[in-house]
Image (cartoon, rainbow, N blue to C red; front, side, top):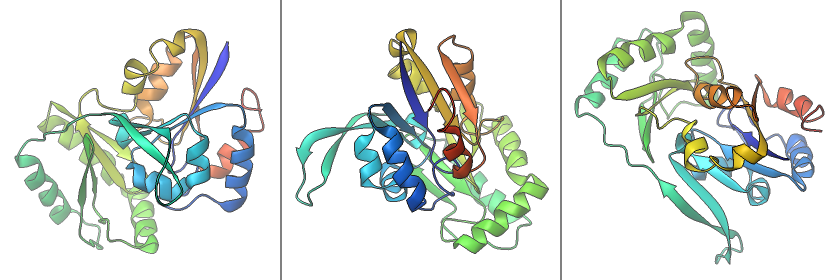
Length: 252
């Protein structure tokens, strides 16, 4: 029985929205040798590529982007820039209720957090990513909201409110400052049914993520794996935790 390894990105391989630490990237590349590794992130493929780098992605067996709503694999083709090309294997559509945007704008307006930078929601494949501080925020502003939310628990309250209002959608906390929105069932756990349904019966599957506690965006995948005899999930808080984890069984 072989091992298959799945990794989240923000808070697991990198600081949220930041590039991979160079020393950890080097160690992770060495660790990947001879292993079947996949990325499972709420971010879009382009952002994942920017964060972990071409060398890491090229050594993976595939990338599940946008909460698993898009799956990409490297092809044998080389594009004009000299890098490997990636093929979109599948993607989910997300048609959201017309009043969702109005509700999100209202939530931003009513939030007591003082810094709101604009671009509060971004449409991705199969989902929307929403934040109070906005996508125009710099790193200091993001850190300010992260600390404020840790005290006020605003995102948990927003998730609970939106779940009551929109019963066909799901809402989970993702990254350091955002909320992921998608059709019910189209969370990270969908990758088991869509891609690994046979593999998990014959291999050990290990998932590493930082948002495993409910209502984090790693929660459903962690639960699905922990409920299967061949699955396991490991909670971390930082990439440093992941670096230590890779030195222990069953990773070492």
